[in-house]
Length: 120
Image 1 (tube, rainbow, N blue to C red):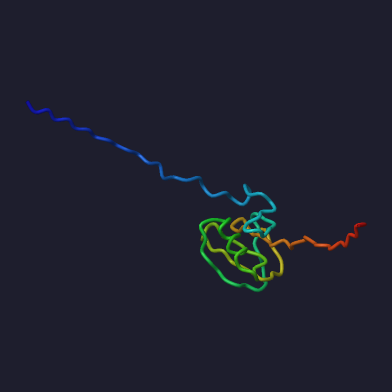
Image 2: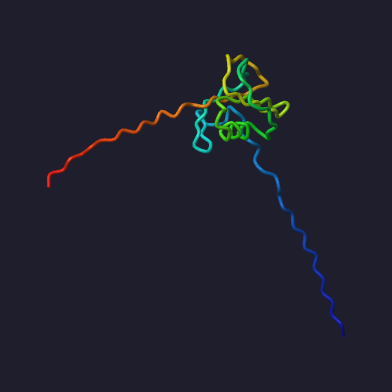
């Protein structure tokens, strides 16, 4: 007498991930890789010295692109196109519902050496 047993196993893996945070959902100031940025949602950058235009998945990736470029002091991302524009300087900003911008904050950390004499 032959006995045959068969099994069918179905596995479902959910590969969805959380949607990237929008500008308004991020901490302000926002820190990435040790660099701190002020955020201005729905704000575009006008004028200035552009460094590069790169495509990014989200605003956080645009901020990181600026943090990774030492000469970058500001960045603007247009969610409708994914284009992130990096700037070493800029002239001004304007209200723009299709832009989110970030501005590198200066490191205000100071170090002071103090000599201390102790009695023997």
